Length: 145
Image (cartoon, rainbow, N blue to C red; front, side, top):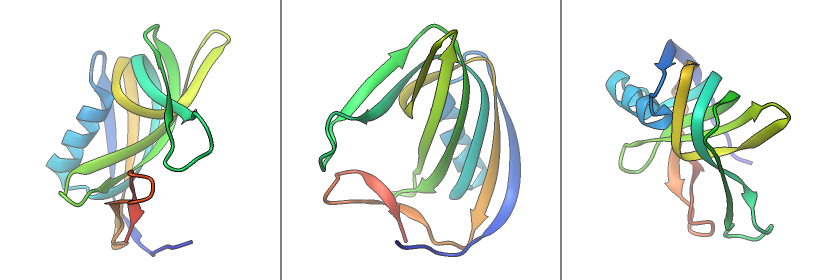
């Protein structure tokens, strides 16, 4: 285990509107507001999304199991935002999206389009030195210091 201490900075309250691209809008906001490290809390609905719902097998590097939906679902999510080595924001967002008796849970990657509204609370983290670094073993951008 590795960790660093930080402290809370700004709190941003965000309303994503119908048709907004969830990840694109959040990345653009991070750049505009110069947020380099944050926790994200989300609630609302998605019209469609692509997500990774686990590895095919428990091996490293993992091969993702992709899942998607395009039937408008209620969602709740939590995630983090850290800059990568190019100073680009990388969002790691896990969410559950349900409709009727069916619920999809996973890591939202690729497309994710807001349906009606997605409310996001962004808690900025200052002073931790956290960032995304390429992990040679997994081939993924992982949390590092």
